[in-house]
Image (cartoon, rainbow, N blue to C red; front, side):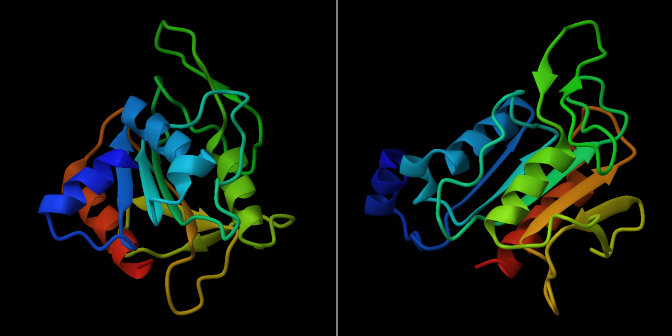
Length: 176
C-alpha cells in the first residue's frame, strides 16, 4: 500500500513484518485491509480490538496463504457484541443504535478454514497467560499460539490496553 511504501522511504521498515491493529471502527477497517486482495499483500497479521466486520462481510483473508488474526472482544460489549461461542449467527447492537455484525465465531471459523484448520469441531481453549481472558481457536498452534485466536474478556466496548496491547505485540512476535 502506498502509505507503507512512503514510510519505507524514510524509515527502516521490514516489509515482511507489517501488521495492522485497530479498535472499534478501526478494527472493522483491519478486517477490510486483510480481506481485500490488494491490501492483503502488505500485511503479515491483524489484531482487531472490539470490532467485527459488518453482517454480510464473511470473507476469508485476501491472501491464499491465509492470515494470522488475533480478535479481542468484550462479552458485555453492547456496541459490537461478539455473540455466543460456537454461534455463527450475526450480532446486533443493544446500546440504542442498530448495527449488524458478523459474529466472532463465524469470522474466526472462516479465517481458520482458510488456513486448513478443522472448523468442524468446537474451538479449543488456548492459554495466553491472562487469567481473565478466554481464548479459543480451531487451529492447533503446537508449541506456539495458533494463527487464528478468538479472545473474549468480560468487558464492554473498551480497549483495556494495559493487557490487550502487550498481548497484540506478543501475538505479532509469534507470527513473524
